[in-house]
Length: 519
Image 1 (cartoon, one colour):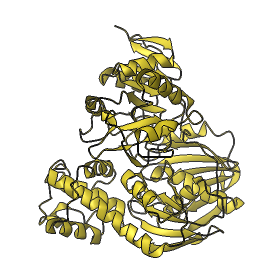
Image 2: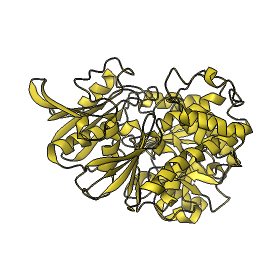
Image 3: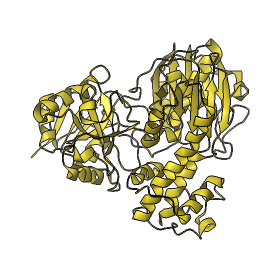
Image 4: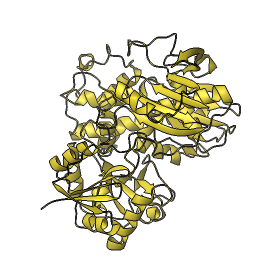
């Protein structure tokens, strides 16, 4: 069975499942388009080049009527709904062939994405947590994949979390949740002193928790009484609040889980809040669940995959797929003239030597990663030892100096450098450092957002790390995403050359070729 699936709205994505395998998941923001972009005609055409025949099923994820005036509720299931009543089907004619048109809710797309991509066998009962912009609920999925809501803990946790940032930022008039604010707040929370809540802090936290996060109710005029309005996001008072607010939001969900989820089942986590590494680590260490799984596309970039899995379940009874995180689009070589660079066949030892010399390398290999985290195929790599390298990388990325830089590490050496005894392939957890040598990837609270890598999953980056370890004794380097500010991953040669020439990149690698600037 072939299923072509579309996620409308922000984080637009087109995914294709063939015979229970994810063939691709193409995201509208990738190839240097605006972050959180919606599906475009070019993305549709690109996706068609990877499909060899008319699919059996066209799947459309439900979305929020009013956020997108193009939504036709006769075709789309809408945003909310976790059980089978959230499914719509009918037959349509598509390019002269009768195909099935399937739609299920956005809520189900999160649940089925995490369930279908998880390593747990179909039929193994589990809990699920969906926490994102509008949804904040726990569920139980039984052996027959019947979904029961255990309860809503908090409406709109993702929007509430991002709103705190906009309160303090004097450049923002209202909440803009899809502007990277949640990630910035996660970084700022690490600077918090985590002291007991003050009356002003508690009052603001209570207000945000109890307020509906709609466009008409999140204006700063509603909270003129708070001393945190326009205080500045880098003020220590706001950094303190950021950590306490983060703890308060997590504790609200933790208290519910501790009281109500007592079967010691595995937990699936989906939704944009699943990108919060601090919370993910807390869930892992909570002892409430037998295991934890978070897909690398836990935010809305995984919704098209989730809707496709839902359609597969509906038509075949099977809810599991095989998949690879490198299921994006191939790199586009659209530039013949590279007269400013010398080209060499890739020698891993040579690139490792450049990194040792504090050179910054743009690294491109194969297809891009699904989800928002660069995992070694669209990355900027650098030496991890000097804190000045973190500052340089943030300048290259044109982002705030308080943002941390993540490490990528050989899997078998993770426990040598970090307080972590297992893999972390998708950069979704925080780990504490066991060494003071890796200053560029150590955040203010001695944490890092680690990606581990092995020879099976990414042999190219693994070989580079092995060579770097031979030279330095450490099998770990800095890894941050290769992209222009507020754009998706770079995915074509013309953009890569422009980026390297304008951002002080020392060299770049594309699919086994090393490019060095001519002197």
